[in-house]
Amino acid sequence: NTEVDYLIASFDGSSKTDITVVASGSGGVEACAAALLDNKPCYGGVRLRRNGRFVTFFYVPDGCPPLQRGRASMYKNGVLNVLEGSDNEIDMRPGLTEDQC
Image: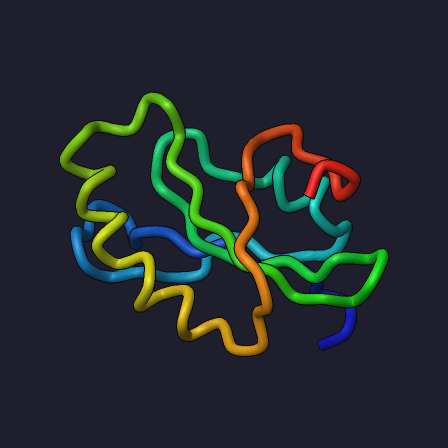
């Protein structure tokens, strides 16, 4: 689907192991940054508009409990490896713009 240029995945409900897609859409880095969850770690990828490259990210909100933060970081490589075609990882955060990548 060429209309979708970002994807965000996170833990499914209260599960400690199941990860599912929680958001996807178009609008590039800015739309993806606006869609980040504020209470759970997020994994994802976004296609950059300026050059068409696909980049991945791992984001943990400041208020995330330490145990959840640690568990999420253990899954990071496994989840991001599923997102094939990525050539870089960016430091995603709310308010990020493509010019800051």
